[in-house]
Image 1 (cartoon, rainbow, N blue to C red):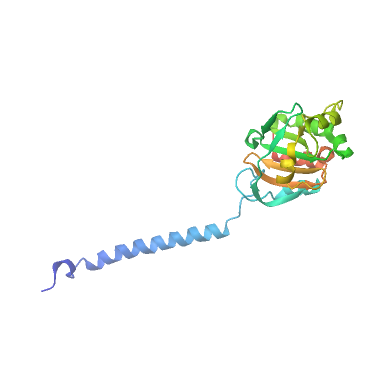
Image 2 (cartoon, rainbow, N blue to C red):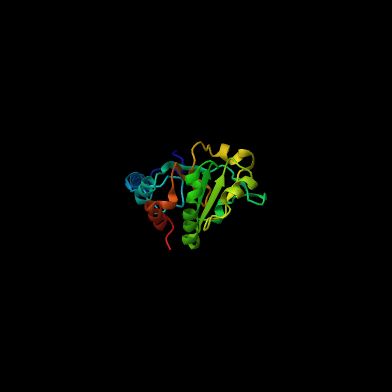
Amino acid sequence: MIPSAVRPGPRAGKTVLVPLAVLVFALSAAAAWWLRGRTAPRPQGGAGRAGEDGLSGQPAELLRGAGFTVADRRTAAPPLELSDLDGRPGDVRFAEADLTLVYFWFSSCAPCVAELPALGSLARDYAKRRLRVLPVCVDGDAATVRALVDGIQGAPAVYADPGGRAKARFDVQVSPTVVLVDRAGRVLARGAGAHPGGRKEFREFLDVFLPP
């Protein structure tokens, strides 16, 4: 006697066809999803604030025109601990600005000191768009740096690097070295010898990356 659980009957053909139809549909949907993921264009992201890919398109070209090397992948910036010119230490929190421009310079770099008013102009013009400009002298204490910048009209707040920690962490070898960090604390670009204060390409980049 054939067990009733597997006994063939008049509805057996229908009960087999329904699962097969479901299986075919599932396989078709999976194949369509896989093909869509392979062929869909990757979003450029405009300013590219989210995600780990480096900048591309117009923002990247403008930065290169301003003397920067654009990172292929955004990597976390090292911790940045600075001292103001009163000697008070503090940690930089990149999340407090949409873009942070860190301008590392040596005390012997006269063109760097001369650029401070232009950096101050950038900071003022783009403050409402959440740009922060941090000029950091990497080889002098607070008193030495104060003596260098006293009397310079229009300069932004200037910082010192006690002990050279920031210089070492950011591998500063050329003056100036400019590092751009997004609000997630990731490095977008570096400019060894870049002078963004006077480059129209850099302002054009800011207009794209930090829209009003």
